[in-house]
Length: 444
Ligand code: P5A
View 1 (spheres, rainbow, N blue to C red):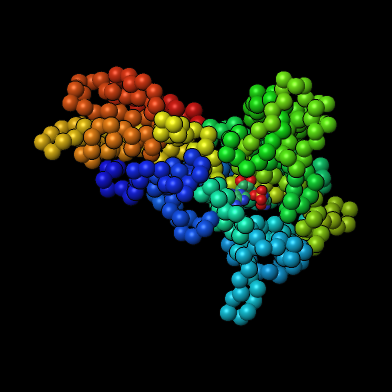
View 2: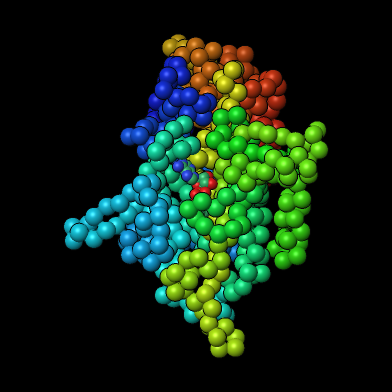
């Protein structure tokens, strides 16, 4: 794609209203545009990244056997009255009345809606387990929306719900999501650590937040450093091995501040392994048994003829927040260089030809190179503007393609000036460049 034809409204300087680097960069390169407090439009560059993140999240949900549905954004207050949360949820819930004066709301989460779907369709234990998810906008009238899309009022979430016959089976579902979250964040090139967390308005007594380290994060965390060395390569969804996997993480103290206990921390973690820092919550999973199923009458027939309420959990990933979280993790704001992981980059590579009015040969070369890249499914952005070289590089460093090719007058023959964004230039052939990028793509 030619840069001059794209809708990428780049600002010369950092916008003063943005306090953290992700918010600055997203406004600066025109990924988002604020519509009102905590509510944003997603412009092409930002939307492309978010859609790629969404697709990775989706693939990893499907891999554990979760089925995708789509529930509405607007819900009836009736089901929330049944669960008892209509009053409890308080001012964060955006309440609306329709023309018949019926009380509706913009969903902040979907435990009630999905329980209603389940109870009206499934009646037997033979249909269990069920894992359902959707990826949908949510609205929470946060007191202090801030940091751009990191704490928005409207935000995009993947939320999944599990239905099981017993606690034991429900923990198995919980562990499947636990693993799928580790895999998802790894594919986004993030190190997200599961930390024992509070359950807040969702309820229940088992919960983990998945947190990535960042000074600008809003979650305070207390951990045993060794948890960062763990890796999960489980390929099978076997019950015992998943349980072992979770135990492996839980052996090291790692909690958010609501769960923090100083005495215990100092007792179980030696001084050199203690880490008290901040992070961004990119996912949160909950087990709450029959909290909703009991209140809303979602039961199944058991083998002996008895009935029981289904045991449920819910599992969230902040899809829109992840765009900001990746920037917080990857953006070098001192040198103004962003390098998106290839798995979610808005473009794989930038072609930067040196152009002036009398000589467009470099642009012609770039267009020819692009033809070859297209054949190989590599998505390039070509800077076809007549700006000077340093401002072109500056701009592309902000857009953050993982790779760049510089095409100057000297570019001749087979060798191209290629670089991984932010690194040294190497002179290599287009065939080799294609090979490098394809290999990297396949590893994801
Ligand atoms: C789990 C799924 C829930 O809502 N119900 C359905 C449960 N959990 S949660 O922790 O409240 O939210 C899940 C994830 O959504 C992101 N998130 C936000 N992102 C941007 N702006 C917000 N205001 C916001 N609130 C929550 C977080 O990533 C969170 O982990």
